[in-house]
Image 1 (cartoon, rainbow, N blue to C red):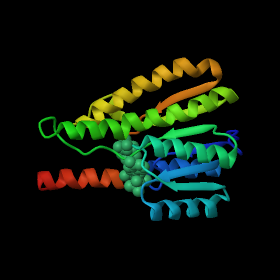
Image 2 (spheres, protein in one colour):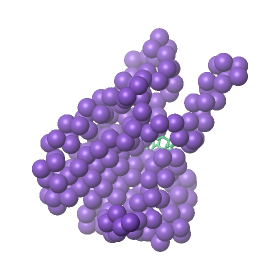
Image 3 (tube, rainbow, N blue to C red):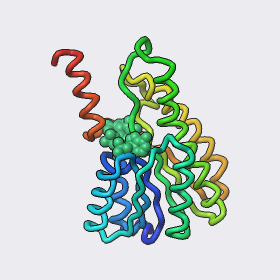
Length: 208
Ligand SMILES: NC(=O)c1ccc[n+]([C@@H]2O[C@H](COP(=O)([O-])OP(=O)(O)OC[C@H]3O[C@@H](n4cnc5c(N)ncnc54)[C@H](OP(=O)(O)O)[C@@H]3O)[C@@H](O)[C@H]2O)c1
């Protein structure tokens, strides 16, 4: 089936490993051109090279932190300059730590909001006007199944991702008329480094 993604330009945030990397590889396999980011330059460049070799896709890779608005702005600008358009943007980030409410500090809350809500907002601010102008765009936020059913000891994720869902649904309504579709993907448990870290922490706590 042709998904009509050939030559589309896709930003995939936080994509050196795990879900972001899998999304990037999937889009590249369909012929999309990619702009990837993550904080660790070495892993990011290795992933970019792996995708280039496997698919022949054109890949721009920039080390940056999605919680830094200036860096997101510069990354979106560089993507536009390099490819001339931005058609798809998949917002993603790491996950917040696993904690109970009692163990969660105000600083943890602020960091959680920055990591998962503000980072989504930063990308949306930069790419939606471009998509609106070209009257075609897809913004896809990766959140979690936690927006449907809160997960024990993941209170930061449970709360902040619901805020992302509210943002995404509002954007979907506001931008649909410009042929810009905004969706929220809520993954269930998927074996990545993030899941292994959460499982190890829980096993240690339970002596299992
Ligand atoms: N795996 C699951 O079962 C599952 C289920 C539901 C929801 N989720 C959520 O989906 C998202 C991705 O999960 P995953 O399992 O793929 O995680 P992962 O394997 O830990 O990968 C996270 C990726 O994000 C990058 N990253 C983390 N913080 C970043 C930042 N501040 N700026 C830029 N890049 C950043 C990491 O690279 P660097 O560390 O080099 O920056 C890495 O490439 C997370 O928010 C997670 O909570 C995961």
